[in-house]
Amino acid sequence: MSPVQLFPVQASTMAPDVDHLLYFLLAVSTFFTCLIFFCIFYFAIRYRRRGEKEIPREVEGSLALELAWSIFPALLTMVMFVWGANIFIRMQRPPDDAIPVYVVAKQWMWKLQHMEGQREINELHIPVNRPVKLIMTSEDVIHSFYVPAFRTKQDVLPGRYTTEWFQPSAPGRYHLFCAEYCGTKHTGMIGWIDVMEPADYQSWLGGGRGTGTLAEGGEKLFQSLACINCHHLTDQGRCPSLVAIYGQPVKLSTGQTVKADEAYIRESILNPTAKVVAGYQPIMPTFQGLVSEEDILQLIEYIKSLGQRPAVASPTNPTTP
Ligand code: CUA
Image (cartoon, rainbow, N blue to C red):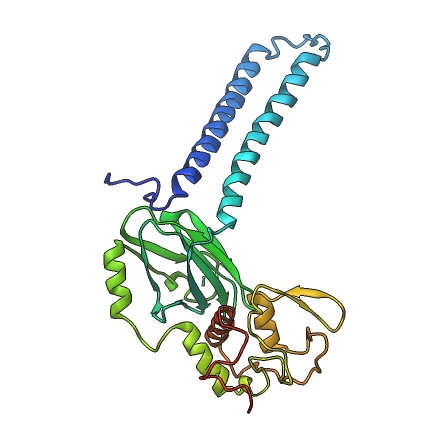
């Protein structure tokens, strides 16, 4: 590695594409900067005033010239637009087989949870050559999850879920930064992404097993918070059954239809009367202050896992109180 490094290493599948676009933008900017400076000096000398009495002769417009300097830059900017939009759209769409990881940001740390139950702080272990999708939210203010080596950055907002994905292309340890000023210790809100060989990752996953998967944690919460008393696994409860609800359209008492995604489930836990399901009374209390953002993520995972279960009661989940 050279002592002076202009760019961070390229460690994701997206990194070369982003860099190529940047090189193109730099080349275009450099070319036009030089051209403009050359013209300024050349014209200043070539057409300078040579005597007190000199009166410049009148200049007629040139249609060809005007068309040229309108059409050529327009085409050039369209190239930038299409090229950039293409990369942007690919960055916005995580592949279906991406490994999901939950991220909760707070002043001033990153809390990460794997589906298998592992929790990490300011460190993320992931396998190389596999797409990883982060589902992120914040407990307080706006943060931004930025990994320069991956060329990806996404704001992390309180009260909302944002996603970011990348596919690491080389094993190693890469800097993680918070890229949104978030208070006194913003500069200390840093960490590492550990990209591991698949075998190392598997042994890491096996080693750090803690308190069960996220969905299992969510199931415990579902019982300890007494959600189960109203939300039965059949439609006989006082509240709607949550079986296979994730990702499905939900009909509301207002006649509207919403999709039961992460944001809807989160809102329904914290502000249950905001969107009441058609045919049910708004009897659910709010769980604001009773559950943390991490608890909500576990509950969401549990509700997602209900999607794969049969719509009848399983022995571990009694349907009658
Ligand atoms: Cu978090 Cu800056």
